[in-house]
Image (cartoon, rainbow over all chains, first blue to last red; front, side, top):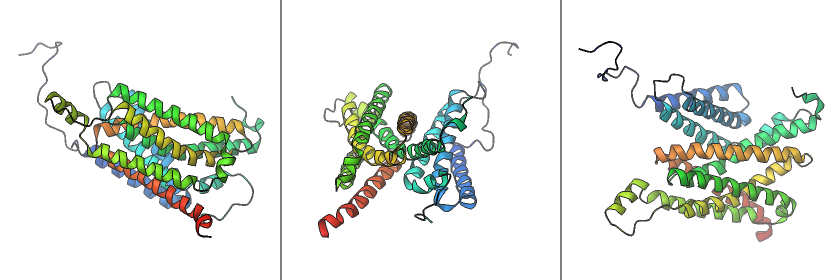
Length: 119
Length: 209
């Protein structure tokens, strides 16, 4: 028998559904695929990879902020959040390397004739 | 509040271009620095990342100062690509070797000849990779911000911050999940092969024509 108000020993709790250890990885891949699909459908093809890179780097920054300042104090997801930050950064860097710079520079340019290098 | 209308339109465009270019071009440096620093213990990892950032910054400043002269040297890109390919080979050998836990276990067992990733080795890999990649990067940034030196300085500062933060995130990830380092290595291999390809077509008229 335990007195109320005193710390109690941890009890066994079954893992809730959807909390499989593979879930963060699957969620990460799903988020990447959805974002990439949206960018492919919405943006001109020449700027998809640079924009996807910027998005991934922003997502990495958000994941890092979540790791540093967790929303709930009692849950410890800092490790997973740091992993997400690293994975988003790596994906962002890879997309940046694979993408071309010229189209995004042309996209920013306010006036003047646009080159047809990547059209 | 900053009134952007006070700035000339060309300057705003130059700053935006430099931001975009730096975000795109600091990526490969960040992957190399993160990859090289990943096998080291945490205090040395931070030092290796710092060495990488300082080296990349110093090299970018030096190359930016002689950007016009560099453009005239044929075969520089090819040489940079081959140098980066050599770094890839060294990193591949490091990855195929024993991890930090295996090395520690082997050393406690008294096995003397266990190759271990050292700070000096990681720093050397980072600096060599920085030489080849900074060369490629600075030419692109210098081209966009030719008439706006403050945009160039702003871009350099941004790339330093980006490299430091991104390399730390990547090194932390690779330290926990070693297999992802092969993905990073594949990215750097792609960068080196692409530099060799472009470098070859750059010297082709000099050699065959």
